[in-house]
Image 1 (tube, helix red, strand yellow):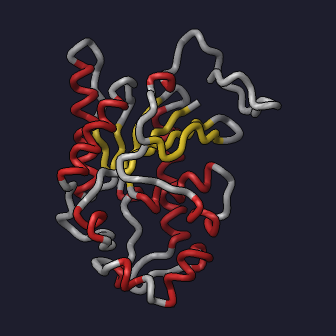
Image 2 (cartoon, one colour):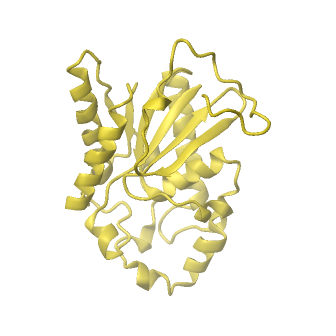
Image 3 (cartoon, one colour):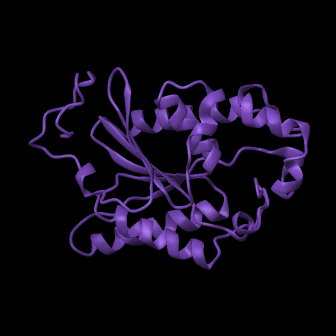
Length: 235
């Protein structure tokens, strides 16, 4: 069972002012975002991460660095720290001509309604399709799962729509339903991948204790079967 912690970057000034940053360069965390990233890092410090995989954009790298710093502090007590790996497949959706525009203006664009109701059909002008975004992001997760192994716990730092698309895939949801998923800044969503299916363990968690996600040598490998009746909560 490979456990992936999907971490959205902390807040940016673009988030705060309602601007679609997309892949614009130089969009870093604002003061609130820095605080959010540090708090997320404190939560993830309860786990020994095999790796931290990040989108290459500034705001995700800053969040990943905060997580690494938390792991480094734990490393002072005998834990080896992970490395940060930048993966282009986890970058923000290429919103093309929408990039840098205010959301309130984009909401008047006819394409906005399609984004809301039929995202699998959306191709952003001068950008990519939302289906392409999902395909590359899910492929990245599957590749890292295979690389790190079935006992690994690792973090992926990415963007709201990218994380929503990964969660939709894990839930067996069509991309057209992914707007039902909420992913807030610096939130942690958790997916455990087994041989036959993924289990979405948490979604949009902004304050819960993560220590229970650590694997134990005393635990048997998790079955790919879902317990009838809901089970007893053990992993």
